[in-house]
Length: 300
Image 1 (cartoon, rainbow, N blue to C red):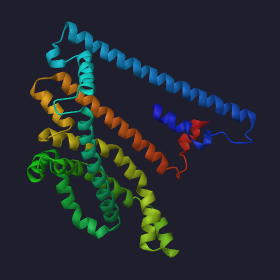
Image 2 (cartoon, helix red, strand yellow):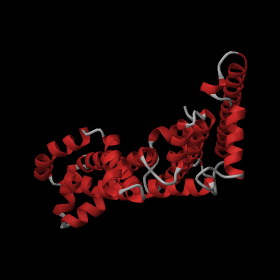
Image 3 (cartoon, helix red, strand yellow):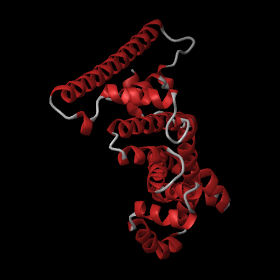
Image 4 (tube, rainbow, N blue to C red):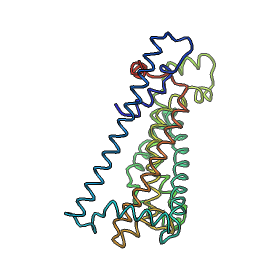
């Protein structure tokens, strides 16, 4: 069981301190919390040890056996990161390049998610329209979208628009298909009962369909920001004036493997921070949902 599962379990209402709880039950809850906290500490220590071992083996291998020109070294990557964050890059401040990439990714993520959610839910509830349009959507989804980045650069230039378009097209389809499936999975008996009670189509859509599809939508958003980041990087890699993709492209052009790894590390950190924010948003939006039986069992 992952640490995140334990983290969710510790936040479960079943383990929350409640006034008037019997002493033996309160002691059991306290023991469970201690056990989960110790488990999380153990997991993080093991992760830290794994990172240290991997970096140590990498440093040793590139010192005695492998050519650091091709594989770089952790110390060289750390030095490159230090230079980027203190002296800047050939394209100006590293913070400016990160901000440019983030702006492109966020714009592509927001627009692609909104359009994907709206179209997915509407087509999920309009069966005839979905049957007519679905072959064309499948055809569009089959197009290798990374290649479209080159077309977007030709159409929109080297500026912001071409990167946002690439991020948008990568985000749209996973969000659309999840929203579509979520709208299709709504309990038909629940919808029929609401209509018998006089609910309009808009009320059914807003009160039943959208909340039911929320889990599907949020699940797709977890991967969608990663796609948005990939779209921005690929767009910058194809042609740009600033951004992390451009820095990686320049590092590749000068055979600077430390620069390539440094760019990858920065992008990975950005993706992990975005994933943490989305997880926080998911917990807030799904607070209304009762905990699953498995969580309750694990909590006790």
